[in-house]
Length: 463
Image (cartoon, rainbow, N blue to C red; front, side, top):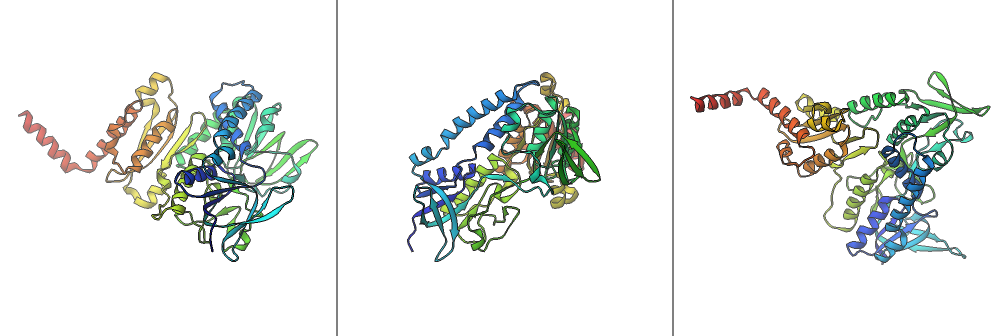
């Protein structure tokens, strides 16, 4: 049976935009099915507002920050708008689409017209990339209590801030928001069901982040699951572990997923849990020719990660030679103060793969001349290296962390050894020089025969 398109994308996420644009550049015939509601502009505004908060001093007007974030979102929306993509050759279709596998995999689309009609769309390959949505938090009574969530912070930014706020959830953006609100003078409590912050990252990052949050005035409660919430006389009460907590405002920060309702996945041999899907390393689902990417896979809600997955999945859907995901070389950043950044394996993951053989090189930032000159002394940088000198991962909390982590990620993609750090230009040359010094000291300690031979050579030349 003939097909209409080479690549058909269903969803309104940033990954969907990047995928259709890339496929059109390659010359494929592409369709983009946009559900009612359009692109995820509210989430983009919320992310931009958090970035503005990081860059502004205390006492900043939140309404003005939101206005600037809206302007930035409007400008970015032009670059990724349906009209712009249509000019690139993308067939943009507005309507509610649902998958059907009879007689073959296709999308039945209810187009948005005065007289609704059903249209059948067939493609060689399909991509499911819905906009990220917070997963259900599973708190009894949450539907009856007013609360904020991370994908739409406009009510929080455009109204007077309450004196007390309580944030429930382990998403990093919730921790970022907690720190910024505490800097603005709010009494903030952060509740997590996990035993530590950032459980997916290196343990040292979570410990230091908690210290910074508490220094900013945030009261952190780990291993404290919230079971129920009630509104009593205008105050919000939560049952958190064995204690009852009171607050004026509640913000939910659960993990992210995608809205999978109403798109016909129940007709396909696909299983999902809490609005997340399982895929192969090439991002293909258990339904042949159907791919998925973005927050629908679980994990962080991170735009650079979404775009990386979109690039890989578009390549696999349209080209003969497939590529597998290499999350180990994709850097991650969290906009706390100071910022957090990481790439590659964490210390527990390196321990699982190499046992006690991997080397951990850690440098406190106050020991660096560049940090002393800038007065930015808080934080650390850690590099994980295999016994042969291969870069395994890097983790940092401190000003400039996202920049130098990007450099490490580039070296890891090139599979470069640790000695390649000497070729990285300023401004981080003293940090990399410190790593190389620690590495050379470790090498000399673990290779005494070569060290003795080298020393004998120098003694011979001096004689």
